[in-house]
Image (cartoon, rainbow, N blue to C red):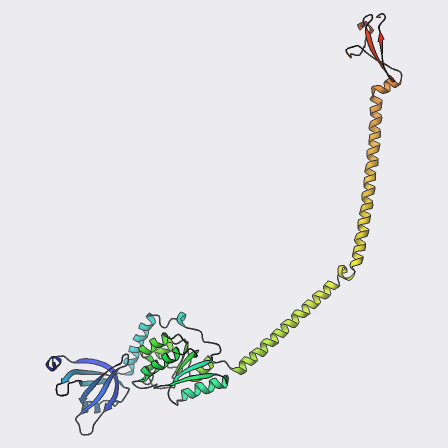
Length: 385
């Protein structure tokens, strides 16, 4: 097994340095190379001179790339890594890698605006993830309680710098997210260098914040600092003090707003009442409301006048029709044969009903019908003319 591992080549490995050990008088030193994205670490040994010549000096939390080769110590049955070159990762390289990671996470939609959740207006309990006895904790708690004295906190004190910061922050966020009494989570840390704030750009931490069901507010560093966790959070605060202003309302401002709203409501109701009062006065001043009986009397008089006009018009029409009938009756009487008969004339008809116009048409002993004004009678022709 040792021979097989010995045939493996050398590789470049990037990680975070922890537990640097320089024992006096020994030509070699040891440190642990930790992977910040996974729970994995390597025990590395290297010449002491290689570590002493590094600038800046090798310290816990530093990110480095190591050219190493695996070795298996048969006597102790231990796998170790021997370093042949150690190079610190510069700020420029770190920023380039962070930008690449940011683009990858953004392409997955972890920073999308539609994923952001609104903050509760008045949280019953605020979860706070911050360093132990840190200024950031005091800023958030003091300012929040100054704004709303009744606010309650669930504080998780974790390491906010160093090789274990990302892991502890992830655990604290998950515990607070699982607590149903916590309405909003604040992750706060004071300012620092790019290397100090590096744990808050850890991919695992960013994904943990994006997966939270509880709204998350981040206040990492100063306003100019922008770790990747800020993009995944639901709201970003420029400072811990600003985070306190975001998560809880100011009781004095809310009371002032209530007073303003009450004043607006009072003015609105007063204006509405005045308008309705003027409207009622205008309605009461109308004649139909001021003197309803007078209106009825006037309408009754108008109705009586119209009935009288209707009666006169009807009588006039009847009189005109009677005169017309009399005139037409006179004309009919003048043209009627009866009038002629009344003057002494008679109508002689033959048995067939034909009127006799010429005596020569008659025969002796022919029976005729004579019609006079008073009635009819029969005659017999004695002798035709």
